[in-house]
Image (tube, rainbow, N blue to C red):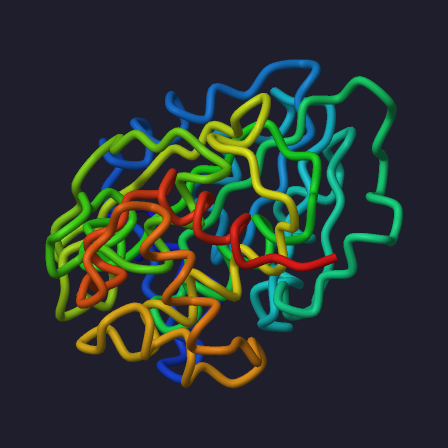
Amino acid sequence: MNRIIGLMKKYNVSPIKSLGQNFLIDENIIEKLARAISPKPGDYIIEIGPGLGSLTERLVGKSAVLYCIEIDKRLHQIILERFGSFPGFYAGNFDVLKFNFEDPLPGYEQGYKIKVTGNLPYYITTPIIMKFLESDFDFDSMYFMMQKEVADRIMAKPSTKDYGALTVAVNHYCQVRPVVSVPPHCFSPQPNVHSAFLEFKKRSAPAYYVKNKDFFFQIVRGAFNQRRKNIINALYNYPGLHLEKEDIQKAVESMGLRPDIRGENLDADRFAELSNLLYKE
């Protein structure tokens, strides 16, 4: 019997569909994930959604701190039972989307290198990634399992159907590398989609200068909110920006762009340039 399936039987646990739970059961894949994360004595590792602990047991005791965040009370108790006696182990039972980055991390000491990992529920993958990126959280790297479709969007190139706001946002902050593709049979229950595990290495400085980060992301979101519209109309119609169409037209023209260009045709540097031209103190 597969070891993880055995744990499900031992603890009488079935995945909860509404929480997007799919337990990783392939030992070879689990080992590849652990090698990519490469826990070291100076690391502070945050694991989101540890489930039954298939990856947790490859990380615990090898880093300075392992902090597991699990929304499911049943799994939280199992994780505490399995790993609670290890030095440097902490566990929180809450929704990671409510994570308060202003609160001190349990067991954190100055100089620790923060790594974040998790097998993310498909329906909240993007909100979780964006929460960590937009919070100015001082992480070194992130390692996430996600739906292959989302991974394709993150690594997409301009002028392709997968290229969008998530692509620009992630690559503004991180260098992204695919670690391994994961077919459905590696999970229990099997999802209806293929998955991918990506590494996000935080850049020492953002890829391009922007005058105001929040305004930049508003421009990016606005450009893709109605992606079939040209960028002038998309930004003019985007709630919250309150830009004059004439100002947008002037900025686009000054960049040497066609007035009918769409957001999907701009690379990240051009988005930064457009944002800086439109931003007013």
